[in-house]
Image (cartoon, helix red, strand yellow):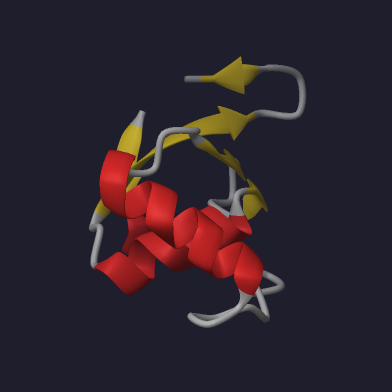
Length: 77
């Protein structure tokens, strides 16, 4: 499922930014290939997995990302 990045909520935003090793590695990959692995969010739109990928997507101005939703029992893709 593809949704706008602006709708995804973060309870604990990542503390890494451009210049950090992890951020820059994800950034380099995303610049070449895009955000390949779907982010995981819950039914309240809070991110469960992929904070760093979301930060990179927003940094690059990517407006929509692929997500899978965890319902508490199963994933919706």
